[in-house]
Length: 117
Image 1 (tube, one colour):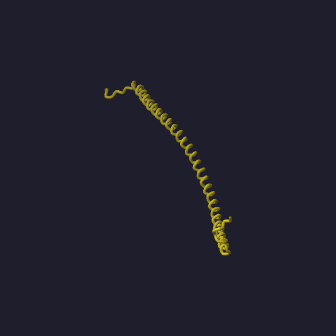
Image 2 (image 1 turned 45 degrees about the vertical axis):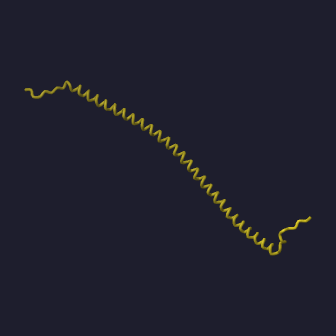
């Protein structure tokens, strides 16, 4: 038993119509593929740019970290110097007081009398 096709047999008009549609589809495909190639190239450029920015960001993070370490070191050094200056000021004040006491001790034998005839 043979099955009959339900569709009508293809005619010359149908074949021409199909060929025209194939040509349109091919043109659209070529147009879309060139657009796709452009998009792929743009994506590559975007990736390069993103990688560059990422590298720059990592470099800035390293620089910031080293700067933070340097600031901490300078802060500690500054604190030590301030302590040292405070000690020197205290020693200077004590020395001034000692000098004053020595000068007074040396003047105790230098008496001056006024108003005696």
